[in-house]
Image 1 (cartoon, rainbow, N blue to C red):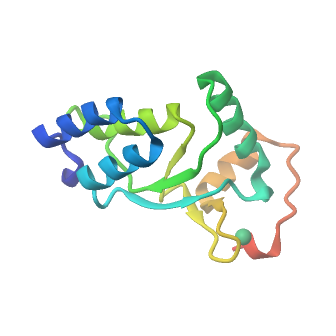
Image 2 (cartoon, helix red, strand yellow):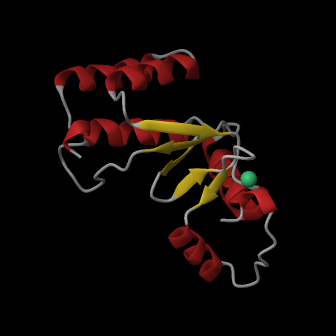
Length: 142
Ligand SMILES: [Zn+2]
């Protein structure tokens, strides 16, 4: 976890992100400041879990932005007071329309390239949506 701790150059990177003009610029700054953080991106969640796409849509509506991508990242320590920069970066991404998920929660299906929940999260989703009927795209079933 130490690799995501705050440094002076990361403080500067965050302030540059606030001034960035395009999302492409934001991503470049993030990759420079936290080279190992972003693992991959997907266009959306697998259609098997469309409720995740709908939740994401409602967050974007609240932020008055369009949906961008699902971003799979390495986990950060959300309770650490030494990782405030990366936490702000994650919040900024959410506010511009990304859905930021850790590799512990989601992976990218190697056949359809969409985001799929890991088993543990899938169980939680099934608890939260008791009427949800599991009908998998073959490609996304584990
Ligand atoms: Zn798939």
